[in-house]
Image 1 (cartoon, rainbow, N blue to C red):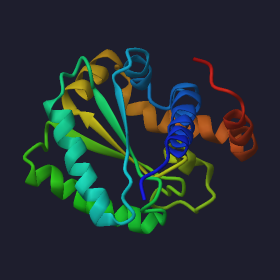
Image 2: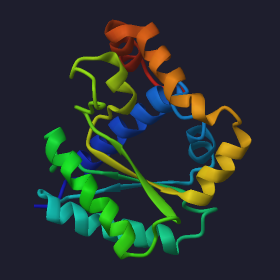
Image 3: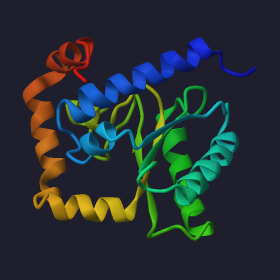
Image 4: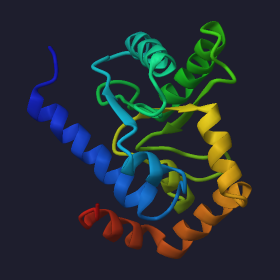
Length: 188
């Protein structure tokens, strides 16, 4: 059964809130604001209920991004509300997603970043605040153009320090601070 318009809007609203409040608002990714402001982000909602369906949608979205004018669509958020809710299953899917990049011969042109409600970095405990830098309201595969990343890194000379700065931001906020921050409305 397809998602209702109301459900789709709820999913998009939660994703946009996360993007504007966490990713942009906390400057977790200094490159995100420009594509957001220029309306160059494609929000695609997968209606898949299993990994195979997600991979079919991923292939479609990768091809859509390859074919699109970067000035119109620079990046895509493939939002997966009904599949891969278990982080380990999601993580396993990333192996196939990376393989798909190779099979489609777009490795080096596109890459995939990962976000999940239960995201957990290797070597951390599930409740460690550092994991929240990659926690999103739904499983998300973020499709990025390599050329855009290179331009952003050239414009942001300390790009290698982003991960460490994000960890410090999250530790400074703590879980209570994160929850309070995320409960407030986004500023556009």
